[in-house]
Length: 200
View 1 (cartoon, rainbow, N blue to C red):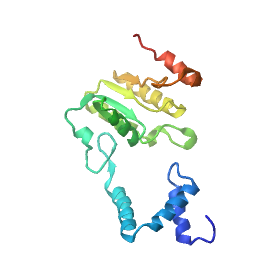
View 2 (tube, rainbow, N blue to C red):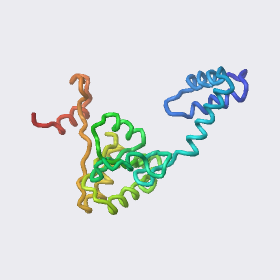
View 3 (cartoon, rainbow, N blue to C red):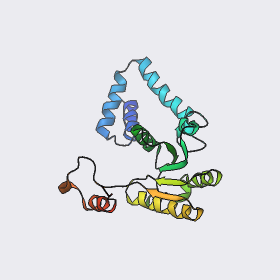
View 4 (cartoon, rainbow, N blue to C red):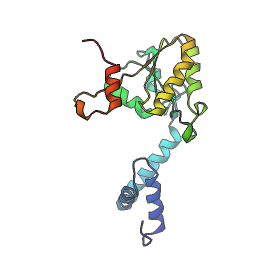
């Protein structure tokens, strides 16, 4: 940001730039937009951030974000408690819930194993998952991590921990998206599509 700008505006832009997917130009636009807000709107915006940060925490069961001790999904007696879908982060729970198809429970890891980034298994919510499985009648764990190196490594690590417990561990099928065109698909996507083919 140009040195001619006031220091508080530069600091505000730098804070916006820390958000994922926000470059410095977008951060500057957001900072200027905040400056165009009324004082009441700016205060409401700041208060919403502070309130969310103070009141939202991890559910004591699934580790998803909630403002209660137990999240609404874990509290719903209509959910299938024999199935747990393991995901990387809270936004993945929202993605599954939008489908209105999955009726089981979730477990949020809050990250993926990535030794390069210093993320080791003990920094994830894996021990909480194991405790849940030992304390309840879970028959299947669905590994729903992304098909990346870190996602695959995490799925394999957890799978190895669960197999001796007699738990069925499944992995999401990956392959061609609906409406996808074969010639534009990469080799890994095509391989996964072949590997996960179903009888029709």
